[in-house]
Image (cartoon, rainbow, N blue to C red; front, side, top):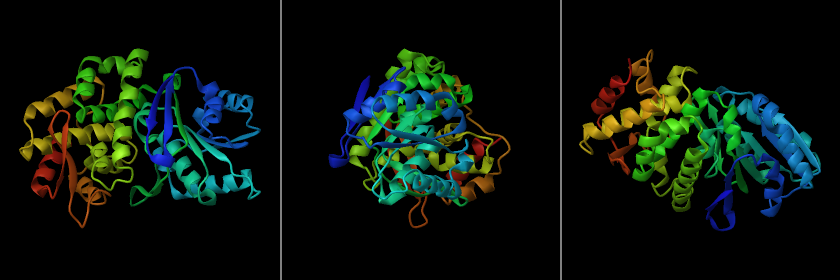
Length: 364
């Protein structure tokens, strides 16, 4: 297995990346001291049906005596306060004795990881947890870095905490059971990393179709690279205070707004794909880079089968929803923009007419 270390002092942890290794999760937890007798596994009905028994058998074989499961319904709309309350109440029933401090294992995609991590952060003021991502998007992005959260009707991820896991454990063989649309959605986050890392972007220009096909060599080139890039960003800016971690939000400002306006018609990755095209267009309109950057970005996205435009959204609604973006400060917009492939900058107070024109260009 490949190992990537997140160096955060006493909060440091390993990310393990391999294939056909889910049964060894318990042994890996033991080796790294993430070991309590009780393992509370939060998953989803689909992922739990596919992988819970293998994970639970490995945990029991490693000496974890009490293993049980709680299912979060599938879908971003279920990452909410109501299901968060259900999760922590289940934890209270799972470990009713205050002397029992369970380990939470979040086995699933980004929705499970975000809510499961937040439940671990809050239950008894914090219990250890492990991220075990089963989607490409979660593997390269949401499982790494300690951001946990749930959504409100007013916006995504507005209630949450920075809470680092004790281990991130990736069995990339689990990606084989993903719907192809979800694979493409995760690929959008990979391309986001490529936009701020030229070597990765050039690899994707030649190999993105192999990645979408879940070629093992492509996955083992891409996933550790993305994780290493994020590890370096998290090391330098764990809590989004040094304006470094913001680079991971390229394409997300308008992307999040379009995702919410689409009300379930777009996956997160599809919305981010269109948002990246808009952000690249804003970069060109601001004179930061030339149109060749946008052309190359669009070409990679289209080769991955991702949208570069979206139909049926109202411009005014998208712009209104964008105002709730958590990156905005004192009422001013803030965008991650490109000075070229692999070179990013943060820009505050982008003129409204430029934002409007770029958004309109990607809305059919």
